[in-house]
Amino acid sequence: MSTTDTAYYSVIGILFTISHEKSFYYLACQKCKRKIAEEGGQFKCSHCGNTSEHCNVVYMFKMRLDDGTGCIWINVLGDLGNEIVGKTAEDLKKMKDSGDESYAKFFDDQKHKVQILPKLS
Ligand SMILES: [Zn+2]
Image (cartoon, protein in one colour):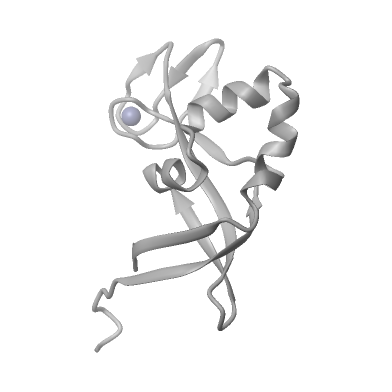
């Protein structure tokens, strides 16, 4: 296989850590799905020019998985995050923003879950 080929792997492992200290999500433009910033209560996309009062909350975090042969850090993006934590990024952000006590425990509760990740490239 050359270095330009894409290969997919399934990984089964034990989840050790989800890195979320800085953030576990980004705000995305509803039109082009790229990263967006809030300016004065509005979201202005510098990529497509869309301006809206709303945006999408999209998972973006790293997690450490042990498959029995070693540990690897995996970047998790978008809907894969929903499958892993069982909640949408928007719901989890709301939990965090409201100061919900269960948020602090939430990531700890994710530890030691068995994860099956199909189609890692
Ligand atoms: Zn956009």
